[in-house]
Length: 366
Image (cartoon, rainbow, N blue to C red; front, side, top):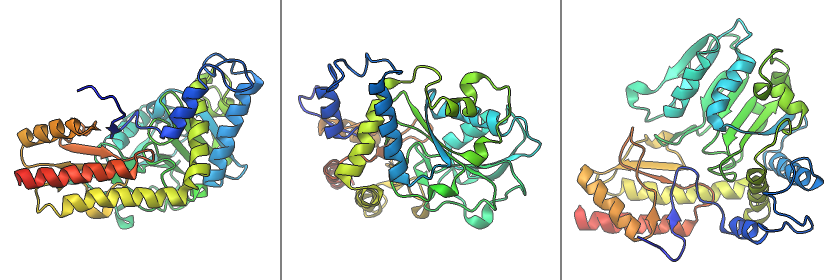
């Protein structure tokens, strides 16, 4: 079905962007004010792009209250490349294992890549519970003196999320924060490293944001491939090679939107909690017509996952939703059912429209 107006896009990524960000990018696509050219055309060595890069970093530092001992890098290859890169930098040359907390599909992939580089210990695996929850503190079996502890703060596919940052007993905490990055305040100084693909909450696809503590950076060995060496990337301030310039520009616009239009991460978190509550309430009040995948104490505020009783009914739900302008609600093939990704840019109005459709569909077919 063709739409003359924008639909509500619940895609897990690349995801919806704030309308005002898209409008500004559109206005300035042909010619960035004062630059005489598009961001797509300008040299990454130019003063104009360096200004964009510095503004994006400054915005991130302000949002997460990052001290100077943290580096902010804009890299390529997505979070998937980080699975290998972080292990090459912090595990390959060491004689101590790294701990991995496996909460779903993306944590599984991170574990697999790390196993190529060094000794890895699975501190907890949610597979017996079909990755429907995160572990309690008492369930984590951490290695004394671990090289680092790796978690995935939010599993996009299964829809589970850490509500609180786990205690790692002093080991550096490395977090794949791709799908809840910038969605809520965090104490960034509890992390040795945070990484996130930008295409969910921070911008468009093509750039990966890495926030890296200087103490951890100094543990990286010499002799790594240049593009996979955090120390080299930090020394060149993300300009060792040509970055994805337009993707960085979008990060600058989105982080500015969070600061100036939204009012910061605390306000963003309140909006996200309100959106998630609407959908989980529709699931919980459906008398089992809708069945949520994640346990209530581990539910994600970013990716709401649920199933219906029959696959035929799920297909009819998706067809009806699309007719209402509610797009990209099909769950990942490994889980099935439905998935509504309600990242920062998804409006409360869009979530209310989905909630209303869920209620109407249940009343017709329940």
